[in-house]
Image 1 (cartoon, rainbow, N blue to C red):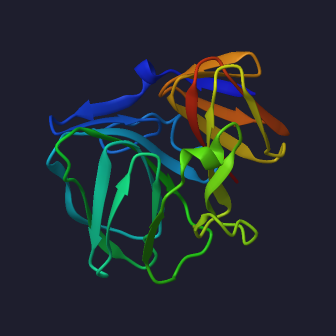
Image 2: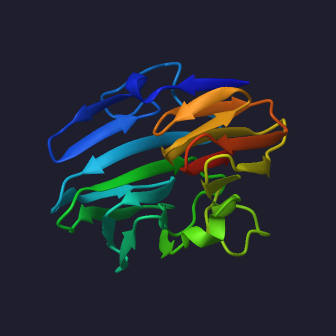
Image 3: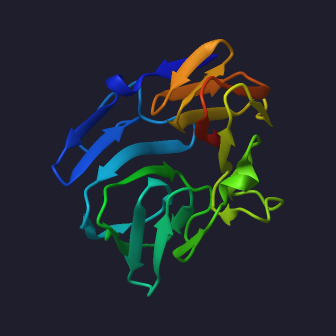
Length: 232
């Protein structure tokens, strides 16, 4: 089953410096039918204007993954971590028992990100932050795990939950497959382009809530950059 959530139907609010679109209930947007997808709780599509961002604020007991689509985001937290994550790369913050952080677009251009929150399986652990580059060549024509709560995904950023964040870049006409399992759920969003899944067209920034699919097959209609969460 695939439930298409067109970008135009997403909730959200334009704050001037931040234009936020929400795939799930968040902040002032509430939809009882879009509270979560398995342990995936938040998928925000944020456009952040140059030289602006989120001032220091706290989190706890949440796995927060930021996928930078364009521009760059600079993170700083009360643990002393600081890092700049650029387009195509990923950062992960495990909020654990509590962390305060800021996220700024310090660039002279607009930055766009997907921010993904996944409920943790393990709680009561110390907070942490990490980032790593994922060259587009590594995921050209195939799915690559960007963040994972599974021990065998050695090259992925670790998260403390029963989930994976997966990405691919596909040329028009290419198909990538992922063994999801009929007992799992996926939520997929093309960052760019358009793809087809089981006969359903999913355009850039649309969401596709997927379940009861053993093998996930994604075919690019246009050159596309795709991100999805494999959720419990």
